[in-house]
Image (cartoon, rainbow, N blue to C red; front, side, top):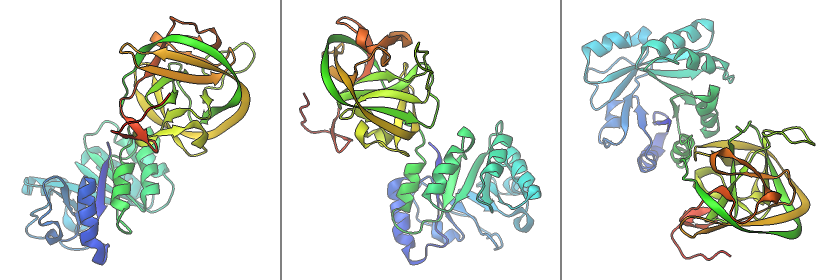
Length: 367
C-alpha cells in the first residue's frame, strides 16, 4: 500500500467536504499551511504542516510531520534535534540538474522528502527512486491528478512511496486512495480433479494479450462460473509450430470470468486495451497487469469440469486445440485436449457470489 496525502491548502470553500471525504476514504495524510486547519483531525490520519513561503510557527501542534524549505526554515535534521516531538521533511522543487541532485541527497538522508517535478517527464523521479534504494526515508511526490498519481506509483516498478494531491473536488480523495492500492491480495489456489471433458462445438474464444511478460509459472484464472476458476498458463512455453508469445493467455470462451481490479470479476468479452487483469502464479501470488489487446475469434471449444477437495466445482471452456494449456500442481503444463478424469489442475474457488463483478453475500445459482 502506497501513501495517499491530500493537500487542502487550495480547496477553498470545499475544504470541510474534502476533509470529511478524505477521512472516510482513510487517506494517510492531510497537508495544510496553518496548524489550525489540522486541529480536530482524528489520530487515524497523519497531520502534515507545510508553511510554504511562510515562516515556521512557534508551535507545531497538532502536526505529526513538518515539511520545510531549507533555505527559508533551516535544515530538517537540525530542526528535528530541536523539536523531537515531530518529524521533519524537506521540500524540493526539481527544475534542473542541481535541484535533482538536491532531491537525491534528500532521498538518501531525510526522513521525509516532498518532491515537486516541474517537467512532465518521469525520468528525474526514476533517478531519485534509484538514489533512495537503500535509504530508510520516504518519498512523497506531488501529482496533479489521480491519473498522474497512478503513473507515479508505478515508476521504475517501485514507484514513489506516496503521492500528495490537491483535490479538484469531492471524489478525488477516494480516487487517490484507490490508486494507492497498487497491490492485489494473494489468492489461495487448490488442486482440482478433472471429472469430465467434452467437445462442445464452435464458439468465440478470447486471447488476452497484455503489456507485460508472464513468467513460466504464471497465467490468469478463468472460469465459466464466478465461484470456480482454473489457472490458464500464458504462452511462455515452447510450441512446435509457432513462436512463444509470453505476453498472451489463450484464455477461454468469451462468456468466461477472470479476475480484474479491486477483486472484481470481468467477462473476457469486456476486456479491452487498458483494462487490468490479475496475473496469478502457482503459489497464488498476484499482480495487476495491463491488457494491450483482446483477440476474439471463432474456434472449436472444449469444456473441462473439475472438482475441489471440498466438493465445489469449476468449469472452463477453452479453444479445443492441443496448444492451449493450463497449469497443474508444481507448475506442470497440461495440454487441454489431453486432460482426462483424474488429472489435477490448479484453480481458485471463491466463496462470495457476484453482482456486476463485485463480491456480495447473496443467493446466486450458476450452472
